[in-house]
Length: 314
Image (cartoon, rainbow, N blue to C red):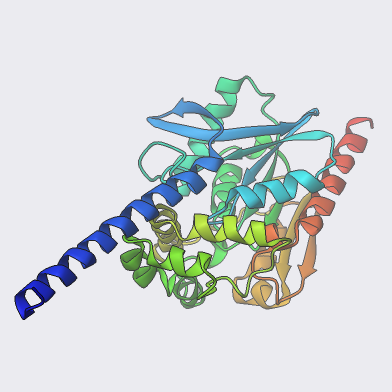
């Protein structure tokens, strides 16, 4: 029974069974974790945008997240936010929860404008743009400056797109994507992470093991890695738009960055957008500010909303 031919057949069958089991495991887990971001949807220019409105108030804050922003980023902000405003979160085209082809930051900004009109919003917004999301925020300011009454740039990169520094940044962020995506067909990276054999996110801070598990399982999904890679490639292939000084007039603007990134990515230039701008420096060791340290962002945002409320009474 156990001749060489039968042994090869047995090993081959077992290998095929393992590969099929790994594929089914990957598909099931990916669907479960990516499905958590589902909210409401609205169709704008052939894209079904997944979005969520949180909170109440006279002002609307448009949150443009970093590449790979997850439910945990949003939850961290919502838990700390106490301002008299509502937060609008949305998933850009290409993300699993928004149905439609990938779009440039300029096209996304135009879609947002039509979306807000469709909602019937008062066309006066506070914008928050982190990392890749800062490109969308820049485009909106360029196209509709009269609609932006305040904003916060968090580690903005738009003024350095196409530079060698950006290319090194993207290389660091995507260095492991190729192997993770290939092995991800059969769920191997996810399995190794969940079993504690390998920790791909030991440099990222989490408030609990449950948060870490959710974050890892979202970011190890091939669909998420593909769109993150696509967005980050925009950073290397684009050219910076020159900033028009004082285009926002005296609308309050905050730039949040580290000392290192401030220099490396020309981020002090963003202060030129407004006559009422300030720079906030956070520690260089923080890699993912929005998720790991939401209290800094929320503190700035609460203060900005309060400032706008006080100005409205003058």
